[in-house]
Length: 224
Image 1 (cartoon, rainbow, N blue to C red):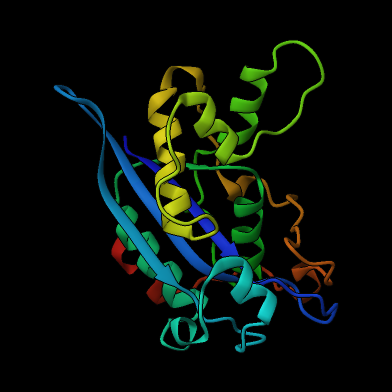
Image 2: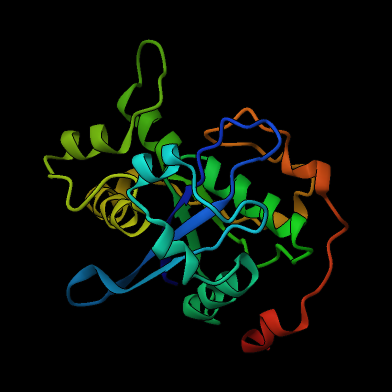
C-alpha cells in the first residue's frame, strides 16, 4: 500500500472578495520494498491555473516564487486533479500532508467544482502526529517542516513553498521517523461536515459557492 506524501501551494490574497486557490500540486509516492525498506518510487507535479482570479498577485509571486508564465500554461483544477488521481493509481493508498490545510482546501475545491471526494482516503496529518510525539510533556505546539527536518538531522532540499520540494522534504521526515506515525483509515466522503478553510487569506469561504457533490464522468474513468 503506497504512501502519497503531497503538498499544495495557494494564492495569497488580501482582497476579501477572493478566497485562496490552489496553484501548485506536488507529491511523492513512497513504497515499502522488502529488500531496501521505504523508498521513493515516483514523483508528481503540476501547476494549477486559478478559476476566479487568473492573474497572480505580487504577494503570491513573492511568497511562492511561482510566476504568471507558470500559471498561464497550467490546467484548471478539475484537469489538474484528474492528472493527480491518475498518477496515484488504482491501488489503495494512504495520503499524508504536513498540516490540515491541504486536505481542507482539496475538499473545498472539489465542492466548488462539483467533484467527488471519495478519492481522498486514509488521509493523515503528519505535522500533528510528529508535533505531539516531540512534545510529550509541556505545552503542545505545531512544529514547522523546517523544524522537523532539523530535529531529524536532515537538510532542507530545494525551495520552501514550492509544492514538490515541500512534498519531497515531508517524505524525508516520514521515512526517517516512520515508526512514530500511526496512520488512520478514513474517507472524506464520510465526513461531509469538514469545514472549508481559507489559507493565507481572510476571504469569504469557498463554501459560500458550494454546490452539492456531483460526478464529473471523465475525471475518474481511469479508476473504473
